[in-house]
Image 1 (cartoon, helix red, strand yellow):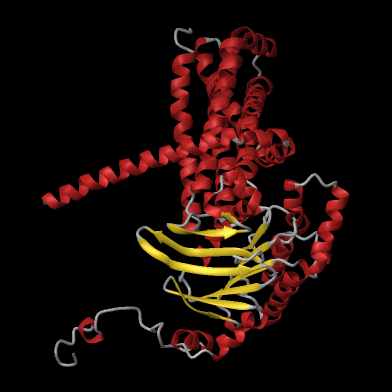
Image 2 (tube, one colour; image 1 turned 30 degrees about the vertical axis):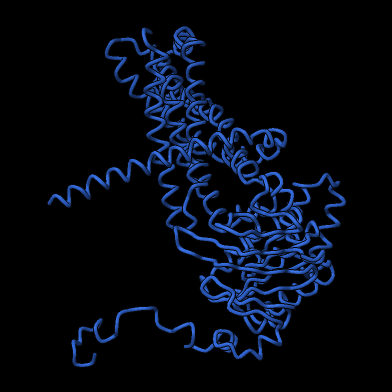
Length: 265
Length: 270
């Protein structure tokens, strides 16, 4: 029995040390990537190419999800608000929910599972098939040539995807409540216009998406680059990207919301 | 060291996790020659290539390429040196998101300011050398194993290096592709005046094209010589390796307890 306890404690210690090492490696990697980003910035066509793969190709899932989320919000909002006779405020409810919370969070979650996993798998497979080693041997730094463009492409794409999500979501809410149910169109838009504050709602939402964009893509590129060069290694890294990014998004969302909207009515 | 020596390896030791992989390796590789490094799987051949390329540092000793000690170079100096060397990976390691043309053009675009028209001509010339000019628009996934290896060869000579290292270039090829790759290695070495280091365990194909052979076994150089000397060698390891004999200095059985005790036969057969 005491031996089991010792082994248990040792196991816990081992995991803690491993995690700290990994965190250290990740920080080192992140700093290296930032230092080597100058090359990507100078050759912006590399980033544009990746924006197409991570951003443009994620548009379909973002637009379709945004539309449905907006429509559901419209339905649920109308259902509740009409009990109090304030169904004209449904536009405000849809817009605030999307711009403050659902837009950034759901778009980031979708982005992590669509683009983040793809980035990890691609970099991991490039490592497993020795493409990164070949690049190193050609005196080309893979962090500057492969990793940094993908990171910046993700960071640039994320706010636009979230904006698209919110815009389409608001349109979905409009479709359901105004076009289908028949809520007054004028009050739907004017109440929304009055309630949504540019500084507190829109700017804060954009800040959130930028933070999520950095978190998701940083996790995705690190997991890919750090993946063991085997089939299991790459599949494990891809799973970790989705799980870690999702938890990071939700955790960061709470922290950011606590700072941004305290004291707001 | 003579001026004709391109790679000099002196008392090189390398350990991984306290396990000695290479022990006291000494080699001299002159310019313009094809040198084979042979040995069984896991004997440290690929590690040696990685040490020459500067991907890893030795535990002691040194590798000198063109007069520079590789592991003492800064990262920038190492990258400068790597522009003069190339490596052909086991399965080609072509960039799967780039076409054949873009793969060969990769280094030219990264390291030179040549106009696109000049790059186009150079790439087509390199691909013509390996017989794949007509395949320049294909993607790596559309190539057979032998073709991928040839494209990788064209890519590795893109900047006319002084040294090319080949990591198991013959693995998994049909006899025709095998002979094509072998002849290309010899022809390119002669035409470009570079040095080729071929890490392989394909004895018959490599003995046809190389100038000198080193055998590595258990981390040390077990034998070395010209192909003729190797073929006639009576050294037990070389004889076993060249003739592919099942048992010899490299045993068929992995070290184990006695067979009888593993089968729990007690004293009856021990």
